[in-house]
Image (cartoon, rainbow, N blue to C red; front, top):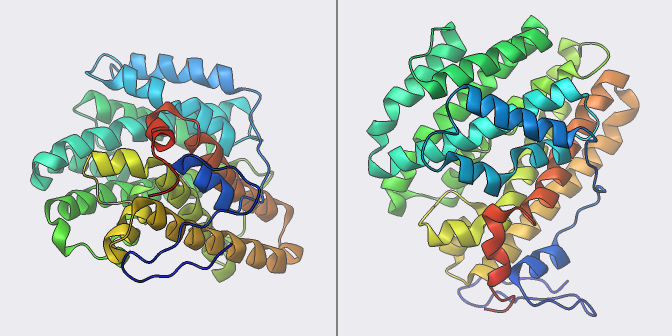
Length: 338
């Protein structure tokens, strides 16, 4: 691959020899290093039906735009790709949580675009449900409370506490995102990636993968600096990969919190060149993940290995879902060359 310059409008869009590239999606596919093979959960169709029933039971699909959004985002498909080896019951919780986060995220975007302060009632309700088990006052809150119940029934108390804490981090991130959208000229690249780490909503799923293991991970394993670094790397690689394919959609919508768009603002270059800069960052992140995992794997318990393998599921799953999901189809309408 040709090295990429980082000076204004001098970033080369290089394509490996003998690989025909016509669209931005092709360009991503030809440069992104994805060492983890595609997998799919055999219970995907059951999970899709379950998501539809669950959203309907809490009155969410009756709200404007939600049913169409679910068709375009395919939450059960994302759950299947990221969680290929879990049982049907756990897959259903993962799929429900993905669907909930899609609904919640779109609602937060809509309210936050008008005013960050307009998000406070929705976010405060979520925090009170997750932190204090307060009764919900809205259909969205009721869905979250039911999701919390599902997690508590499947997980150990310690795992459920970690799930609720990570979920609160996701909620807080949406407020940061709204503030950044309201003051776009103050947004630095580092701020963007920090906010993206929260709004990605990937790490709230990791306690569920703890629950999928034959025994609980020990505190020493959970808090091991290398295992914590692997969790951060996997979440970043997963969501940044989605950012590559969503960049066209989000640029057209005026969104700011996207790794590729942050690189474009930073380097004042074409979208294609910015995407390649982001690809380089993702490739380096995946390579670091592989290196650290290879070094620590011989020391890990069987449960800890299963936990890390679930992190890998999000890296590969987000890639395979993002490149074909209708929500990001615009990436195939943009040419590979600027």
